[in-house]
Length: 160
Image 1 (tube, one colour):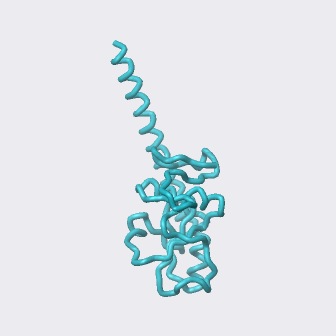
Image 2 (cartoon, rainbow, N blue to C red):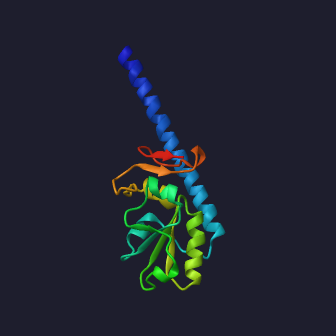
Image 3 (cartoon, one colour):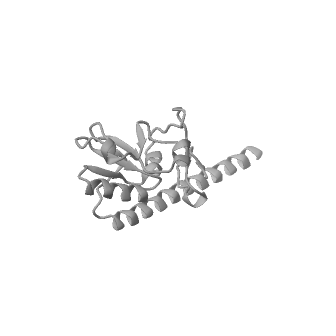
């Protein structure tokens, strides 16, 4: 009887976590669609499309506090246009894609072949992409500003 009770509790907890994950994915998708609607002139790439880019420059549009928590391996903070190679594709990301869409627009106006990472670091995490902290160590932490923005998949920790 006690084993059955524990099994029921485990199943309820699992279904609750699954519902939270599905809910966060749905919320993330809805927010991505709003950003894409607002920035129709910006090319948005899914994580899969972004990973297919040939030797891109990856730029992080987030602030230093966010970058110190985690970032996509190989990324740099936003650089001045003079420091960028016009011949290479540029992938810009932030937490969910809004700030990176603004930066992507600016880069395109300057003649760069820039793309926004659709869904930002949140989508990267949902796709199982690696993240590193300021010391270059793998991490599952992501700066999300607050619980409302913590749309991370299970196994990740929102920091705010």
